[in-house]
Every structure is written in C-alpha cells, then in structure tokens.
Image 1: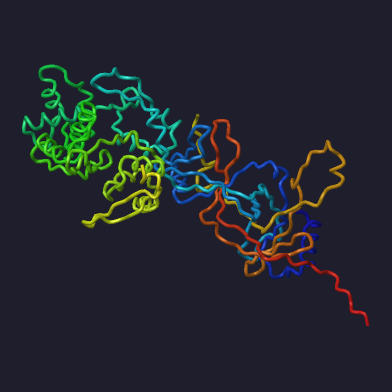
Image 2: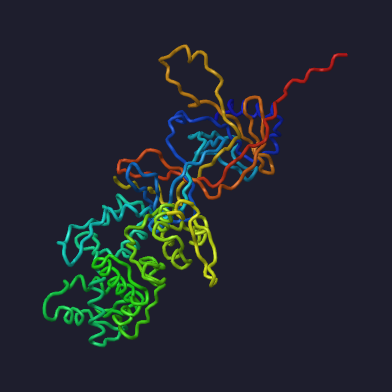
Amino acid sequence: MDEQEQEHFFRRAEYAKVDREKLCLPSASVSFSPFVEQNKYRLIELNEQLESALKNGEDVVIRGDPQDGVVVCTDTKTFDIKICTTSNELLVSSDLIIPRTKEGPTAATADLVLRVHDYMEPKEILPKLDKLQKLLPTFALSNDSEPKGISTAELLDRVQSSKFQLQEELNRLGAIDRDGWKVVTDMERVSYSICTAIDSESWSLAAIDESGMVQIINEFEQVWPEWAIQHTLKALSKSEKDGTYEICQKKLSIQVALFILKRNAEETNQSIVLEEFTEVWKTMLPSEVEPDVKDLFGFAYVSADKSRGKTVEVIHYLNPLNLPGDPLMLFNFLFSLKKQWTDAELQALTKRVTPPGKQASAIISKYCRQSKSATGVKLFTSKTPNNNNA
Amino acid sequence: MVQFYVKCSKPFETIPEWKVIEIQGELNLREDKEAKKDENKPNEGFGGKKFGDIHFDESGTPILVLGHHTMTGKITKVSPPYGVLGSERNEKGDYYVEAIIREKIIFKTRPKPIITHVPTRLK
C-alpha cells in the first residue's frame, strides 16, 4: 500500500470513528482475490485423529467406488464425510494478520481467496466391509481347487476401510494371503484334525509344535496341505514362537463346535438338541478345555423346539458371512429366525454393527423391545409388528 | 476406482496458518448494469473487488468498516481447526492441505451506519 492509499485508508477509518492512535497494528485493507469465484479450495474440519495422522505423516486416503459416499481413512480409522452448510458466510484470507501489539507496520493488504457457506465434516464410522465378502474368493479345501486371491492394494481400492480395520476383518473371516487374499470355508475341518491330534498325542495346548502336528495329521496320507495346517494353527493360537504355538482354548472350542454344527447342517439340515450337542462337543475336545455355549453366540443361536413332543432347546448354525451389515436389516433377519432373543446372543451379534463411541446395548434398545421372562432373564422382541406375527 | 491421498503441501509444522472472516448472512453485489449490457464480458462476481477494512482496537477487538457500515466482532478459536484442501488434484493425483485455520474473526452484530454529516436543527 503506497502513502496515498494509506492516507485514504485511515481517512475512511476516521469517518467510521475509529481512533487511529489506539489501534493494534497493522490494520488490513481486505479485497477479494481475482480467482475467488473459482473455488480453488475446500474447507475440511480436521478432528484430532485426522490432524495427528497428517502431523505424523500417516496416510490419509479417500476411498471407495464412484457410487459410494465419500469416506476418508487414516491408517486405523474410517470417517464418513458430511457436507455441513452454515447460513454464515465464511471468507478465507491467506494473508490476514491478527495483530497483538501497537508496534507494527501501519496498514497491510489482505486477500480473500475463498467465499463459502459450507465445509466438510468427518465423522468416525464403522468401516464399510459388506463389499469385502463379495470380493474375497472362497473355496473349500476338501472339494474345490484353489482360486486366485485378491491383493491388499486391490481390496483397499474398493473397500471403504482403514488398513488396520481391513486386516482385522480379514483375520476374523479367517482369510489367508497366498498369492492374494482368499477364504478357506472349511477351516473348522482342519481345526478338528488338529484337535484330534492334540487329544490322541496328549499334547499340552501351551506348546504345540508345527512340524510335529503336520507329521501326525499327514502320517499315512496327505489329509491337509502343510500351509493349511500352519494357517489354522495361527488362527487358533494366542502366540507363536519359532514354530511353537500356544493354542487358545476358546478359539479351539469354537472351531470344533462349528465343525459339529456345519456337518450336522450339511448332513441332516436339522438343528441339534442343545444337550446332545454339548455332550458331543465336550467329548471331542481335549479334557483341559471347558466349552461354553455363550462363546458360540455370533455363529449360532439357541431356540425352543416344541415339535419333538416336549419343549427342548435346540442349537442352530448361523453363517457370519450371511449376516447383513446394516442394523435394521440385521434385526429383521434375526427376528425372522426366532421371535425372542437373549441379551448375550444379541450382544455378540450386534458388535459388528455398533458405530464407534456407542454401546451395543444402545443399538439393541433402538431396534428391540425389552421384556423379562418368568425366570428373570432379559428377552428382546422386535419393535416391528410384522416380525412378531411371522 | 483408485485411492486419492490427502497430503500436506509442506512439512506439517510449516503449513501456513490462514484466517477466516465469518459474517452473518450473505454478501450481495450491487447489480453492475454496464457489465449486464455487455454479454461477452465474463461475470467476475466478487473477483478483484474490495471487501472492507479491518482494524483492531487496543483490546484487540476487530472493527470492520464495510461500505457505509461498521461492525465490531470477536476473535475466536476454530476447534477443531479447518484444513484448506486444494479442490483440484495435483499431477500425482493427490489432494493437498495448503493451509490450516485455527482462528477466525466473527462479526455477528448488526451493522451500524456511519453518519458523517449531522444536519443542524432548524431554529
């Protein structure tokens, strides 16, 4: 600003009754930049996680197919992007100085480079993993040939999830990376072979040697490929050191239960009486493992069956790959299976659809009506009348 | 579908800090009759136009002089801060965070007219 312009600038201030002597300096003469209408920039709220991700040089990535909404991922979290509109006008200046002292150059110019009424607001959400189940090739070791897998990079191109959350889900689904990710659908059979070997050799679950296990299982003929045994041992264990695994009792008992339930579903297509099931389950497991039906909620559910003359409790297999990822669809599906669910069953099933920062109980009470049985057990029924009449 | 990376234009600590001036309502341009006559002339809207003057009094209170009006405002923290994202991707296909906004000046008072000439009362 030259002298004459400064003169005009402060004369305008005088007219406006601004006391020049009492100002923090510099004052600013603000103009719109010539390209202000070109909307060269967008504003995005940087919440703590996004700011620290940028600060630490982590990847911040916009992911998804064109038809998906915009989702931003850091290495560990997923955020949905909403456009927030405000009735106030936001004028962004690239060079406006907010003075703190009276000692400064007297006047400066400032440019407004953006004029907007909205900004992007990230909101932490659950990763959108439904697509993952469609993208992952699946095969059964016992009857299919091994398909080509899909790479991590390809998955991240399509699935709206952070790397960490994607890896967690791949682990949950029991996926394996052999020339790309794929899912072995009959891992419980391998687990059963491992369980039988542990039982027959009376090995301790605390230290299972991989090569010894492969030798026992494939002693007379190749029952399972070596990689499949190794993959299953990894999935079943708490820790691994130099080919020695510490097997998790709970994981082993779940896999053996799945083996019984799936085999039963394939062979008879009928549910099993809970009492019979628990008995078979116990005998199949090594003696040190104490099975608990509650661990199976998420893969199985218990219901009352009146068709066998008297009312008995029966257990059904529930394929986690078929469960909808949307809470409303999930509850509609669940109430189509049975009308009343216990708290423990629903807690296990709704964990996956509970948004960050919320409790599973909040989701359950949003979609279900709570009541108490004669014995004082919390029971949940659908809030939608159609589901109760079905 | 590809993935678009959001990166900092500079090391994070050295990203410039920009400011926001927030005003209530909306700014409108006085209709430019000359420009309307000439249809070939591109509509530049606010581009290159003068906005106003901002002064800060000794307690740091901002005063906006806008046309024939003044407004006093307040300096507030923007929490969480805004990132200023370039709306076009660079040659590598990445979006850049060009600046961060941690402070804004908000003017939410009703504009006061500037009265320069007070007519003397008729006797």
